[in-house]
Length: 565
Image 1: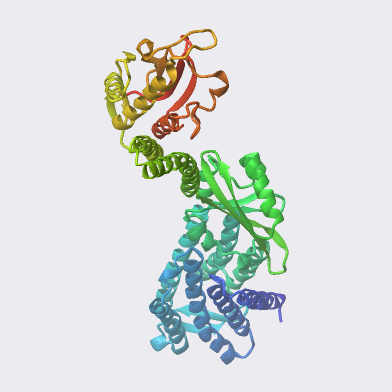
Image 2 (image 1 turned 30 degrees about the horizontal axis):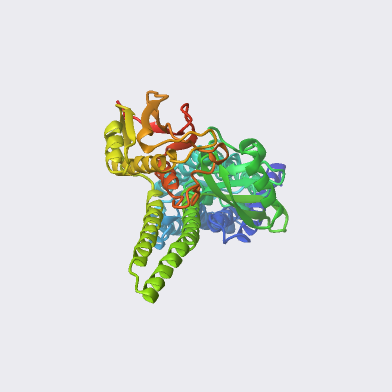
């Protein structure tokens, strides 16, 4: 027997052994997407090569039978490869029972046509080949079978190449490329045989080459340990950010959501974590990598991100890296902080009310008891004063609670008009108002008027004194002048200044005047300026206190928006 015969048999034997061995390896991971049809495809290829091996035996009847039976695994191989391509590229929804039933028609009909060969429509003749095996002279049914098979081959090749083009990660591109080359390797060698360029079927040589590419995909790219479709369908489209970090701290995979959250303009793959995030967040990543599992919320620019880590181990328990999930919890965190502030404010209100109401309530109760004991109703006048004091405290506390709410629907208002309207609604006892603020601003008119009213009351209550100070000076209300003016005007904003020529704010108290309950007047509630600060903050303005050039109190409200021209 010639060396050529043994060489051909060796190729057929190697192809069948390699294909069946790889099928067994893939079968062990049949629970993963695409593994089951790939193992079926490899079994079909192995049986195809084995039938060609049998066709080289001297017994002519056995050689002919092997060729006739061979077309069952031929059709099975092509059909299984299409199913694999559909599952691998994320189109498993098409792999229904009805689809599989329709797909199985071709292997069955092609196998039966080759086996029975009705009217010699599949094989025109089967005769011993000049070199080895059986020479096939094909009929019209064979060419129908071939055209259909190559249509399926074109279809699954387009699917796999399209996957390579779409995927963003080098690992999956390499894996898919190895699988494409492996699946398509037999095709050119089969075309050489069909063209009659050689006298024996060279297709199994392609199976040997394919086995090498499959080995690369399975061993180097860990095909059976990675599910690329999970990345294409879940990781890429999920709203949460995802980062896969290797054991050396390098980012080996990321999805668009993570890149958007971290403000990356290019792919993050290949970059160390500490180079793409802030030092604070890098510390969080390091801490989470030290723990088996964990999560932590960290600020990142204007965002708050909750980072959750999950270790990634292989089947042997070796640490491959970590999966980090990034959840944008900015709105949730802000709501929680607002709620905490509201709870803190309620605690302050409760403390303030319980403390400040206790004294006038005790006073009122004492005078009522005196009136009962003596029958002198004049004591009730003092009790009435105490109840009015309680009413003032309650109104201020309620106002303080309301004014902390954000202004959501501001409108264009005349600053001068609102300032004068506020003055008319306050008991000023002969004090004078000057307004140099003929401008239009964007604000909530009612709340802005309340802001001015509280500043005016503060000036009237604290700016004048009938008692001489250390220098022997006095200030009567008729001499008190309150001025509203505009300073530091820009194209978009301006600063409103409310000042007076009164006794002013003691320098040591300038930083305290806006605190809840702070007052230098035994009769005051200490909430008037706290309400002013709440109203300013609700508009997004900043307010500060100081000493005016005249020596009186001065309040600057900055960041007041002007209408868009």
